[in-house]
Length: 319
Image 1 (cartoon, rainbow, N blue to C red):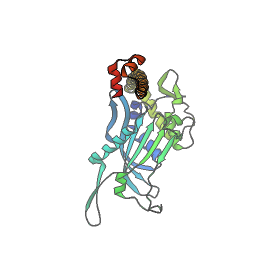
Image 2 (image 1 turned 180 degrees about the horizontal axis):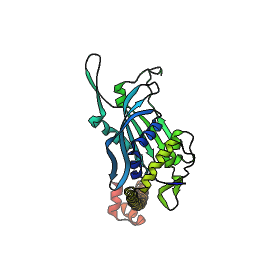
Image 3 (image 1 turned 135 degrees about the vertical axis):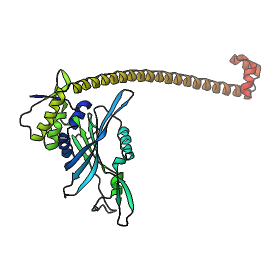
Image 4 (image 1 turned 180 degrees about the vertical axis):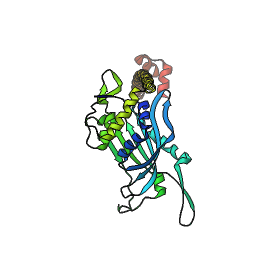
């Protein structure tokens, strides 16, 4: 058995993907394409809002080779979260990509006219929580070029490539026991069923019969487990997560208190409304009785005596 650092932690995942060889293995398996060249962009993004870790992001520029031998540049946008995160956060990040000039390419058409396009984006989402009804550990979302009759069109267009993108979604909870293919064997290092009983920082995996690619990833995670700065970073993530949980518990309790107060106010309003309805019904009955007595020739003074009501009030009902 081998003890490795848990790549669900941002610090460990960053350490893992900073190794170019490991990143190429990992991303080529996800894309199911050969990666000829790969470069990590200058910035990694860890989004914190009000002490909340929401997303961990790394961008890569890659030269990939398609199955037909064609080669082209793409932007690989890798986002990881181990908390349930609003999809709007993913979309907001996508929108910022083309603000970066490094993601823009310029071409000339046959008439010598210059046109600029954004690099095609492939978005990869590694989620520490299930999406919803989909239970496959890896989900691929591909674009298709079709005409009106749904016939496939032969080649992609740079303009459309700039506007749309392919996506790959990994659902970590559904990786358990899945080793059916190259990708699932690599992703097995994320399987949280291998967590040590006394520490979530480390996974304990069986290193027998691993293929060379998985061994390469495991070796990198072994280094992460031994790195003091990575271990400390995991502790900090735990501290922040604890703060998040405390904050969310406080918010939940306050929301419950507000909900109870709102229910109490609503009940009081209903009681008041019911009382007003009863009063209105009584007034209608009194008004009907007074009018009936007047119609039968009973004087106002006599009505006042019968109903024990002031004469002036009876006059108001008559008016």
